[in-house]
Length: 189
Image (cartoon, rainbow, N blue to C red; front, side):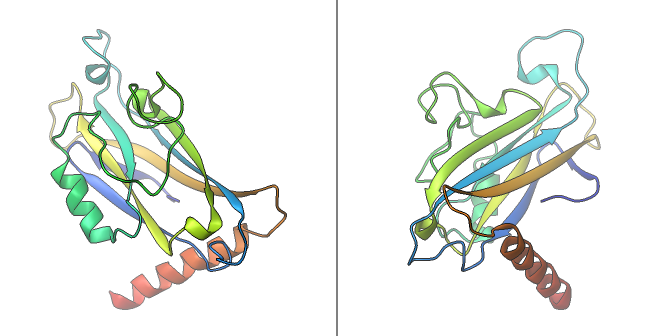
């Protein structure tokens, strides 16, 4: 998903759009697709731990768009909810994540939270016909103990897909869909 070194500061959000090829979201076949999202980042730790969030200089988490939500409205929603508490996940989501963002009553595993550390992974299984043409993922930076407004942390975001109990080529069509998106974006600029 991300290439090279990406950096983000507190109170910033980076939006990524994942395009899905027609072959993957076919209405004719009911394939189960495993979708995995992994966010990894590096932040400076503090020697004393007042609480989990103040242990890191800047902490990150990620959010996924709702079904059919365009990137601009998704960004507006992410920025609007930026100052909301860390466990304020609301609304109908495209995916029912296994862990979720908070440890109480969200996700399929009770007491687990994907945003507890610097390596965050979550996954879900969806039917291929439920997938839309594209969805967005936001990487969101939050303040930790570092008061420097110019401080940034490097991160990497990966989204992977796997057809469960089916032998269909997924990698090439997804790569082609992403390349087509990059080329169109370059032409518009």
